[in-house]
Length: 100
Image 1 (tube, rainbow, N blue to C red):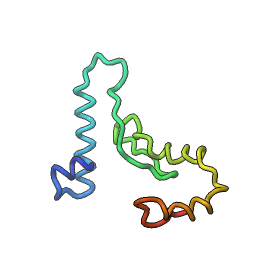
Image 2 (tube, rainbow, N blue to C red):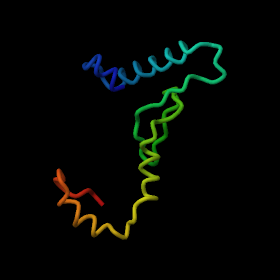
Image 3 (cartoon, one colour):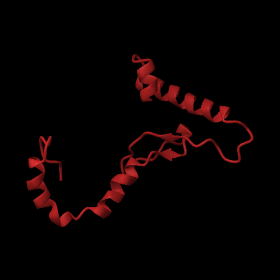
Image 4 (cartoon, rainbow, N blue to C red):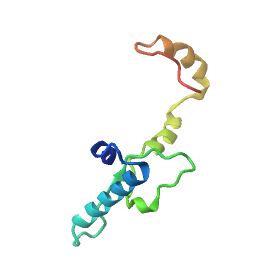
């Protein structure tokens, strides 16, 4: 959708989604008939926890930001949030603490 809007900034949301869907379908068709599996296309889309990936997008999945956001919790010690909240503003380039 971002590419469609970049090429045609006057497109409304529905038209941009349709252009992106057509691009994916054409890419899939041009991959050739002799492939054992469909051409793998990932969408650059961050899904909310309860948001499904639209089936009509014809993609294999997302680039994984939604998954990485969930799995990142495995590497974070939530017990240190007060110390991190106090320390972070002193970091170079930090303008405000993150939301907790």
